[in-house]
Length: 143
Image 1: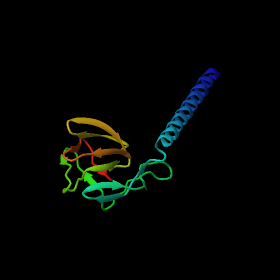
Image 2: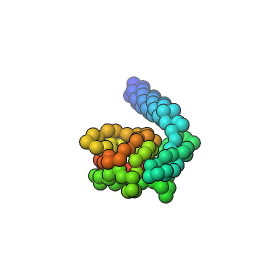
Image 3: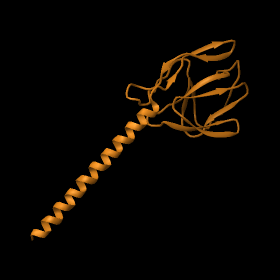
Image 4: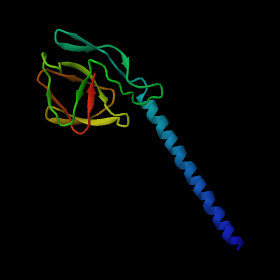
């Protein structure tokens, strides 16, 4: 009977150590992810002669999490809806910061012209007159 208790205590100890190890690994990964995204900024929009320019604004909160916000000048792009860059249209040539429309999504695919590429929340892109842009699977915000 005594050896059964040793086996039960041994298994319980193993499970506790396994859970502690998994928790520590998750905490380290979260900490490393925060470090990579610190200091990412988007810039408010200024339009001069039909071209968009930007200034500084935060797109991450104090903990480094994705900060979803929408301001009047932002352009929301729906999945699989192609938009063309035009000086007189809503999507003008210039530099944009690509933002996720969802807090739990930090990267997404966008088609610009013929090519699809993965972008991350807060990454900057430059669009020229005549470029066509389309998110492939999720809604994005251009600021």
